[in-house]
Image (tube, rainbow, N blue to C red; front, top):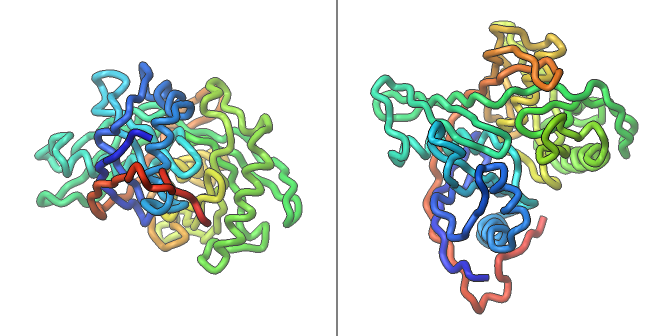
Amino acid sequence: MTIHQVSTTDYHTGGEPFRIVPEPPVTIEGANVAERRMFAISDPEVDNLRKLLCFEPRGHADMYGGFITPPDDEDAHFGVLFWHKDGFSTACGHGSIALAVWAVQTGRVARDPSGITMVVVDVPSGRVSMRVHSADERIIGVDFVNVPSYRLGESVTVETSRGDVLVDIGYGGAIYAHLNASDVGLAVTPEHYSGLIAIGREVKWALNGTEHARHPVDDRLSGIYGTILYDDLGTDEDGNPHQRNVTVFADGQVDRSPCGSGTCSRVAVLATTGHLKQGQRLVHDSIVGTRFHARFVEELTVHGYPAVVPEVTGTAYRTGEHRFEIDPADGLGTGFVLR
């Protein structure tokens, strides 16, 4: 282990942490962000940096973050490799929102005097754009415009310890299984936290190696990234669908926010079924009570699937700056995970 110091800036989006590493002290090879992700997965030095920042005692089992990289070309401001305790993900909406706030607050992207600043970022699943809204030098919200999203599977039967359940499969930069929490006798509330994690992991691993988890054209994007368990809360006062969700991703990691890419996947499924219409917004709450608003701004066809371009609105807040160190004599090395 040759990494001795690394500096980060930390944010949270809807309660979900995001640890930004502006200058990773390791070499990350690849011609574009998608290639760099594959390099990071296989390279011990890059993976050790992930572990150092994510694992205890410097992080925790639900930590999330990203390494800043060059963009794929000059039309984006920068690129990012997203990471969590189990590896490197293909997409991260809450992280993209945090990155947009960070980019404007640090001056990496100059604030537009109109009050709306565009931040364009290359991520492993493609190029995403954010509109950062400011008032009196204060950031008041971010619109995250994701890659085209679509439903991959409808009413797929999954055998679980709570009986057979039906799930939809949706792609929103990553692939998610969607399960109504009431179908397994649960609700998206903190008192059901352990049960939600358990069934979320079950559904993910039951589907992960099947054809339902396969991306139609890019196998690097294949695999069930997580399970979205949701409560249907009816509609708000304007007739918009209102739901609460918890996204259990990686191997039992819980998104404290309503989940950015998961919300995009949810928008795609609801749009395909007609439960979210053009001009409506999804009011999407998290298990801790934070909220995103989401809609789709375009309808199209992608790889033969009816698809939409989702837009998710939220914001992020800086929680601190850190300079982490590792003592060469430290027997714990990059750390550990104890859940």
